[in-house]
Length: 267
Image (cartoon, rainbow, N blue to C red; front, side, top):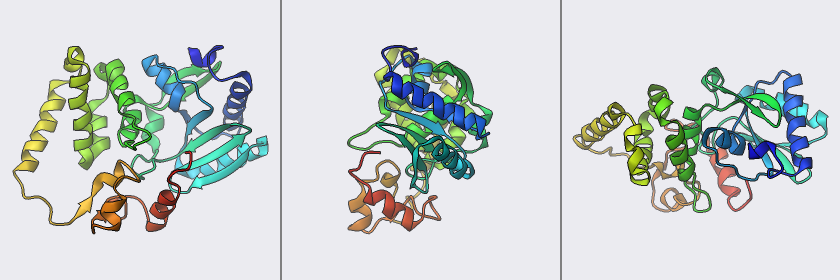
């Protein structure tokens, strides 16, 4: 893999990543690897990166940050609802335990279905493809859109996905998954049969049933689940409820305010 060779991050960065993996392992903090390394393992696409995406359970975040601080990193709980960071010079590790919209929370199933792989000569488990698709599907910012990643993951892995689990992950947000599957058939016409007909039929039936019922009376904007910035006008000026907030979503007002205040900063 390029991530293990001379074309990946420079030597200092790779040494830092290995130290992170070693420290977390020795500290008995369960973790999964996502981001650029997982994407390459699943699709063959390599992106040069200066960070390592480490996925952990929410309850393990403080322990992981403490262990990396002892290692010599500058650590912070950047966003209490989903992300911590450990810095070493220009390189850093993201400790991810949910998603920016609070939806794709890391739970035991992520670990149950983790995939064995070798990263930088280190044996690790990768985030499952299903959960990777789930979390990436909500990233639709103007400056970052993960739709191509979703399409490439489907191209590489659609025939072996646990579709029942993926459908369950999206749950009431099934329209988001449906939109990506429709686009997949457009992007890769010769691969459209890779998506099981039963899955497309099930989602099409769900759409048909939804269209036969009256729309909800509550004015709620679910666009905030896809972009933290582009639908602010809806909730700040036009009177729509924010779908991220409890009880509809998983976030508090304090968490959404902090996430909004960081717009424009590098993740």
